[in-house]
Image (tube, rainbow, N blue to C red):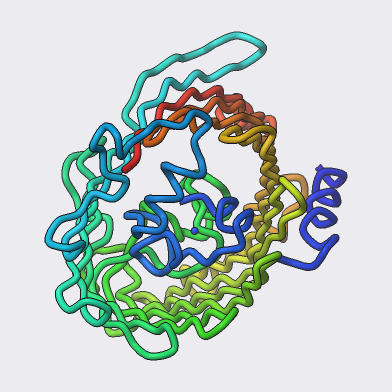
Length: 362
């Protein structure tokens, strides 16, 4: 594992450091707000993002205009827009070169609604998950635009921390808790003057449930995003009941080189249940995405997790390899193999996975 860890650090830091797939933003030199209604990424696409998704990404072109198919689904002169994402998968677990399980599942089914109540000033946004666990709001908020490409939003949203990877099981998302599975209720303010981004949020700190104390979770991100690369830092402080505390801090970034996009993130996480029970953790992610042909992206990622930095030989890691072509407008498929390595006493953590996915987006 030490050799892999050294490789990870070298990959992230070799050419300056660097939320939805972040590699697309890095490859195109764009901020998340360029393509998504939610300024911090993920969810419904803007008119620009929708056009990019059906014109620039697909392998096979389709004359949408001739077939009266809109690129951007909207009404009332774009004052009301809808969108969605649907992902169905077939997932296999593999141990000792044998398939142990095989399962079909709906991974995600999201419907988006954006109402521009006062154009360029006031809007309402809803991101509703309709499957696989029934209808629930992933994000729902009101947003007011400010000068200097700024905004204030209030409601329920995914917190502005780190790279917003699609994979909620990735160590940098699952261990830190900043994934699409853990939105929270509160307020966020952000500004994106020029190549900079400054974002902070104050929320309940209870992942969307009712707060049971007067303390709040504070999350902040600062980033520099020119066209060729990006570098950022994020931090979180969350004081809970009975003097419990959760803190995290990380650096992240990415750069593009010809048809390749490289990105990475490292985080330290501290959890204190009380004055006597404390855990320090470390997670990292390094990824390269390469466009081998129009619409065809190859991904290789390495993930590292140390669940207790004060204990030796308890680390976990993963290697993910796969291909994800955008076949036609609105349709993508992917195939990924995940090599998992954990301690010998963790048979589940040493089981590999092979996943095939079909993705419809609009």
